[in-house]
Length: 568
Image 1 (cartoon, rainbow, N blue to C red):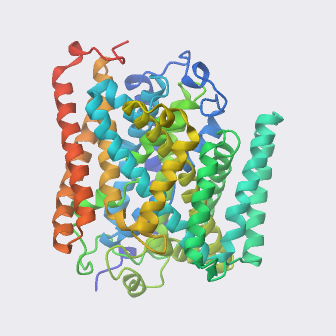
Image 2: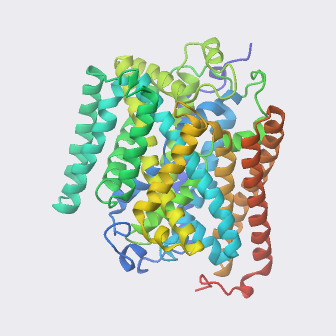
Image 3: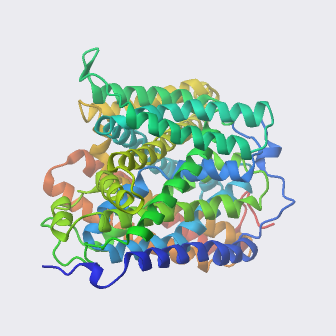
């Protein structure tokens, strides 16, 4: 039998070490990055002011914007990734989450936001053209579109599954939308100071959780000839489409903000319960008895845990919606870097719940019987066990709180994801010279939804087709992070700034991701999974071509710069 890690590490000590590492990254490392690397200027006019339009470009309070950014990037992935990766043991997952957040995610998210703000709120795709040329932009956008497609199609399936498995979450999940609309009106229509809408919003949200626990709601097994899962997926897509074209102040900002407060309360509940109950970590520190078929921890650890350590999707959010709302450039440190720290804290909670929330090693091994098992279910069940033991809450109510937390964040990621997909489609229309696509938010949103529908229902009759291409999410997402760091590094080089702090993480990410893509190619070939094989080849080819262009740009040095983002 593999020894339990309770013999090696107290769960309270593990949690304390993790929190200290993550907060130290914000208070010390990010301060150095802000002053010496990105050189933030409090007097710089941000795009939220220079391009203000009342829809996408809006100067926003940094706490509200942090809520939007954090909850947009902190979907289900920082729970799913760590909850799967602990199959290798808690040690590798813990190290990658803590150190990855401090030295990879923080500087990546912060940097993408800074780069976009310095260039009129351009997306990473548009910035790639400025740095590496039009061909690189087209290749970059292919990867961007595939990542967003995977996120939107898969998260709809995840949320639908949670609403079916935990019907007590239905009222709070949908009621949160009404609460957010009210908060948006109070803040922007009636100029109510932020404190009271925040307090009232959180109280209402937790009241809805109590109501939902008392009054669970489930759809009939058949709705107009559709299964309940298909019905939920369709409802979620329609909602995300509507949300993506509304002004950001009306729903996106307040929904993300209140969800951010709710998450920190949920994290506080988990952390406090862990401290009080001090459960034994039953999972091994390093699992030498992994189930048959489990891939090697290297390089798969670094693509299995993406969100929660470093994620290219964060760069899309930072340069897609967040940069258009940044009031002052100096707010970028709090919004970008601390947003990454918040997600690291969520991933750390997922590790605790999925390694210390089980009664025994045998129970843990039963849950993790094969690679890919565990996931959100292990987080909810393990976390509910810890919260119930530590705080005395009924386990069903604790499960509802954690389910709502996971579903709300997956939902806010869908809101932002569809909006970002619309941006990518409009940029593609600009490149192709198709004015009607470039200029129509509605048409671009419809195209985005149709592509999501095609994946969700074309590859899975029950609407779960998004999960069919999910195996490529980790690799394509980390590849996107590496390519984003390439753009940031070249921008720093052209400004005569130090590049070592971005160059090291981008080199590591690209190496691990390309290796993972090559290994997956072999797996897809062996399995005869030709769809994923072709997608893998497309992503790999695009990556190699962009990497080669980036290497040439780095070799050329700042003296060769003729781009629109020349040295200041």
